[in-house]
Image (cartoon, rainbow, N blue to C red; front, side):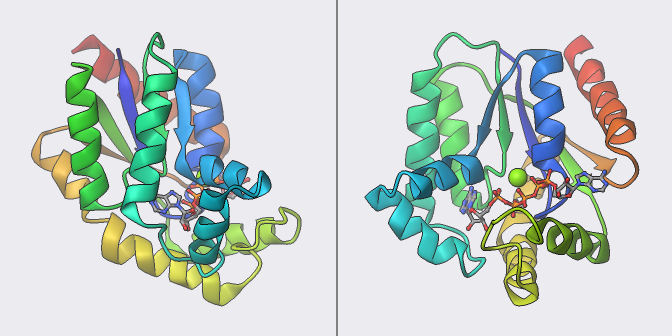
Length: 193
Ligand code: AP5
Ligand code: MG
């Protein structure tokens, strides 16, 4: 298996690049944000609970997202690997992911962090908010809260992967294709190791 984490703040392009990477490397895309939005659309109890946090730009409790990822891993036993997008977002989630992957004897191969300035993040998210219908995109205060949550709780997760030599940083500004090529270069390098 080849397991990849695409890491980065809200609006850094994780979703955009994931769509291209899963085609290139035949990975299964697991985005906790997308999974949560499907639960909201289906009006499940989990979705109704999660929405209260998401609308404010706050992280959903760890046990909720860890449970979702755990069952997603079991749903796709025969894939070539997983692309984790928007997960793990806290130290507790990173520890849980390590344990779940240990059971499969398939650790994380690489974590790629997209680096984008805060000014550019806010610009991208406000622009998408004009058309996306995502309630967490159309409000400057909620966007700032999301970035604040990232800086406080999520950014430290990168240190864990850095300490085990699995973390690389890629510039997340430029055209979508330029960034995609830079990501492929890092992944191809790691696959050859
Ligand atoms: P989630 O859905 O994961 O959202 P996010 O991380 O806040 O970020 P986005 O999905 O908005 O950005 P992205 O990095 O995917 O960028 P994208 O490609 O879309 O999470 C939403 C909420 O769910 C969280 O706030 C939290 O409440 C909850 N949640 C999710 N996972 C959780 C977890 N693990 N634990 C706890 N809570 C969790 O691009 C953004 C925009 O920029 C798009 O319009 C795109 O077209 C544009 N764009 C992309 N690339 C470029 C480029 N190169 N140049 C210009 N524009 C670009
Ligand atoms: Mg996304």
